[in-house]
Length: 266
Image (cartoon, rainbow, N blue to C red):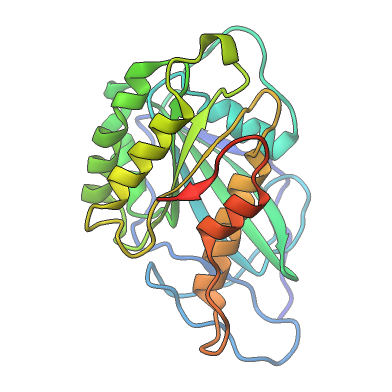
């Protein structure tokens, strides 16, 4: 079956008043190029036909997942996304995200084209109801705090409470301490992030998979690609894993591949 290319796009934004997505929106699987068994449907939804990437390259993908960036306003969610998508850093005046914004990127994960549709959410309270509507469609959530802002760190528990209420039970979670390049302004120690991840991993919501943790820098690019690649590997294996295939160990992967900071599942 042939697949048509869609118009090129760099992404898009969804303001607070926009129509929200349908809840039933699981990973999308492309039609195989050769005759082979298709992957089992992941818990979040049935496989759907794949399409060309909307990220501006026209690349085809085999499987697609939705990833959300959540956390307080100003923690660097947009900068992290732009660093990963475009390899650039947004320097200059800080402008808060309004409602929801998104970008797409296709990764080659163990020979499979994995498209990540990454949603950048507004951290302000007035947009929180909009953000809630997107939780239920997310396959992974990157929960960010700013190492130079103690309040953003203290609010992680509140964000996790929202995730528990609105997100899928099997959603992949990762905790990121961002802006690690700002060493002179650091107020949250790396050890504090590790302790928080360990504490949160003790909840019944996270007992099965734990909570991987690492520190990142959108400015230098430290561990940014690693965070998204690790998420893509975890989601890809969950959707395609054969019974005899060994389980992908997310925390072992980030611990082995992480640079310059401690990376762990606690």
